[in-house]
Length: 134
Length: 381
Image (cartoon, rainbow over all chains, first blue to last red; front, side):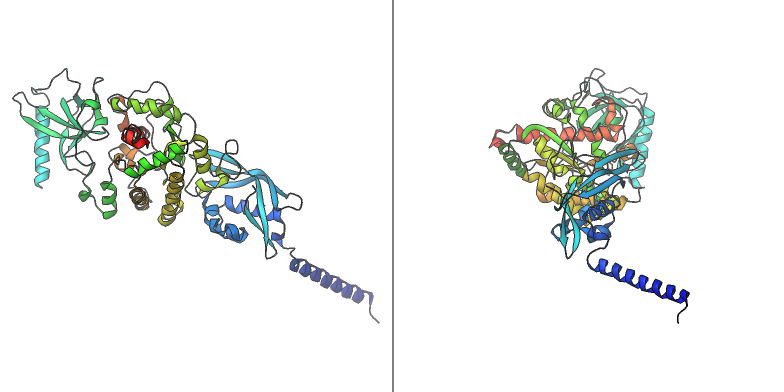
């Protein structure tokens, strides 16, 4: 005969196990941070503004791999950040449209670079940034 | 020691003779004097030994100039015809007659520097390149190809970072009120190219570097097509015959010389492919800057690339050596300004401002290209 408190304790543990299993399953099915193409593009553009070479290399598609250095150094001479940036996948296409801009400061000069539409491709289950959309 | 003694002796003579009778023609436009005490050197450059000091107001006669006109050889002659001062001074420090015309002044064959007097091999290479290089045969072929591609021979553009984006660089050539002063020989080329400099370049932007030049994200969305790089966009919309190119001030802080070399070569090759003559330029640097030696290496890359592709080269680094602060602002990147918003080469303005000197060298190079290629009937194909 279990006491009511013991029953509640066991149920809580079972629920926790189920939740953990569900999370693991989601991650295995591509539910990680890079699974959302819009999020990939946002992260890529943020890394580009900050000249973060490691992130750029991890998010760039193999077709554009030779250009990772250029993407990483492009804003290397300025202090840059994303401003009002948001991105959304266009239907089920391989295009992500973004609004907002990269704001770059050089000395006393501030320049705004509007974000545009970008191509994304799936490689090994992960979405990758693959240049500007034609 | 002997050299020092000789210089001291000549200086004493000059000081003593400041008020003595001199045989100078007061009506001659080549008669001049310095508006501040200046060094007199054995040749037209700062690596030539100093042989005397010319005091303010002492009259001297201009008898020769360097290829640009930034240095002149002056003589001081006594009444008995004895020449006791004969050397080179920066023309920007002289009170020049309004009637002086450099087209009438013979051009010296002396080199712009004595590289063997430089303190290191890296500097020697930089001192060896002339301020304005000759134009190679290879550029005639590029020009011909450009005409076939419907480029405009009278259109010039600029490609570079904020030092080139400066509205007072090149763009001044399109403004009325230019005062060329003694640089009269540049008037025809100013008339020829001037108007084309009015339209701003989308490939000369603040913060641009040799990587950003190939990034469509840096192209102006109002002017450029989707996916076009700033370089592609600029060459398509203007179809110039000549592109004045200078990078380095930004790049030297962020990338190494191998990457700089690679990006500059890519820039040169894409420009040549469009039938445009790329004119490379070294950039000024200050020995007190922490990036001084890296800037020297970058500039040596520029000289090497120009040699490899037989490109026209402006050695701004060399030309700016005599200027106060090497023609640079306090930030060590941007060329300083004298404050004028028109093109002024009269009364020594190029000596006061790096920006003005750079405009003068750009116009001088355009003149060299126009005379050597554009006006040569054989170059038309």
